[in-house]
Image (cartoon, rainbow, N blue to C red):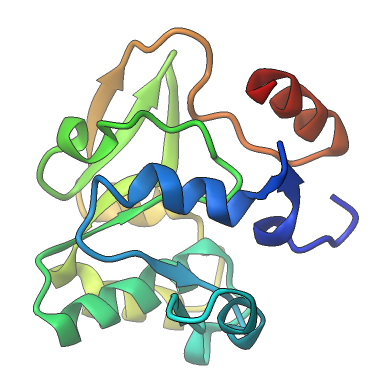
Length: 177
């Protein structure tokens, strides 16, 4: 997307973050946004939203944001965290219920969506160690390490499509019209 802040891209008159929050709010007790190295950009635009920074693992990708969420869950004594990328705006309205207990991850159409998952709070320390180890820090590798359970979703279309390019945004725009 040319370096654009995906959370603040507009789709059908609302930002991707607004769309994601609207889909998740009925499913979870608290929404937290993993905002990378600059959580203030989210807080300024959405006062009251809990925006987390990636801390010491900034720049290491989605797992740094997942760790930030798990650490916040530890402080709040929450047992598990549902992660969904902000550019996956069509997730099912019953995603959390269908994923069930952590650790679980979406399998749709034979494709595993590793960032659409339920993470156990207890994985926090192990994830910090994983990120502290030199090498590739792929979500799928950590998911395998903690024994993520695949949950099959047979929904029509692709409710887990990512908006990664202008043509994806255009296709999503046609879906919301």
